[in-house]
Image (cartoon, rainbow, N blue to C red; front, side, top):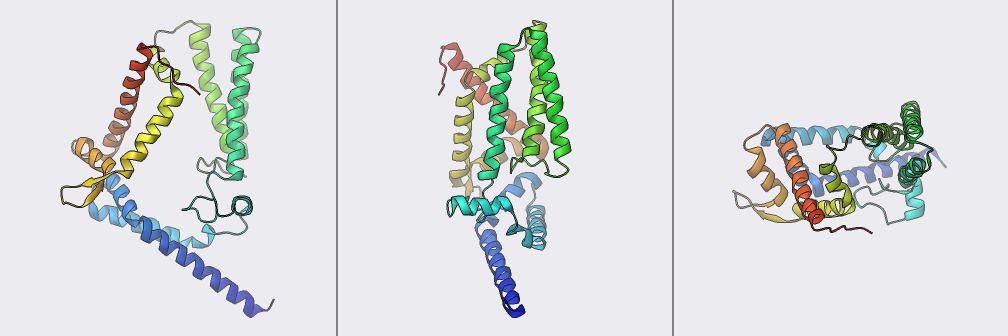
Length: 270
């Protein structure tokens, strides 16, 4: 391959990347502005924040389609066109991200088996603490070579979060099973009994809130979630406090619904 061919290929690839970025901006720019508006609460600041983010992405545009990325290559090779539409050349829930996610699930299965088969509560507690400490140490050490990344669910992230979860579980196990302090558990039991229902229904509601559009004060269509947030929460609190209030209201809503089901003895399971 001649030098001219190499230059032509690089120019074509650069043109393709620029076209993809332009299409992404054209499609998602209004949504980015609305999202920034929920945080900045000022039209000019929102515009500046989005433009700064896009400018930073543009400077690193070569890394967006890096052909040396094993994850992206494997997703394209195995999944073909069936990848996340926004990702274009990779899927954040692709092949290499699914493997450590399955490992996270298996951590939970093995933990349950360990607790059930332990000779005593103290033995189970020591095992949880030891495994949790090892998971955190492994994740942090591994993170120097494979960064902790939730979006990609990297192996280091899976190890670190599994370790942290085991430490928290050990604390709960000591409090509830060893010490017998159960007075604080009923509110959590309400959510835990129908955990899958809460996860599914809350996700469904979240998708509906961003899919439904209604007319705003200026007559232009607005996302229902943004209208509710600005009307109920953003008007009386700073951005951070309003966001916390929104999240707290969501938790209380689903807790109340699940409490009603628990009182009637209804358990939704798969």
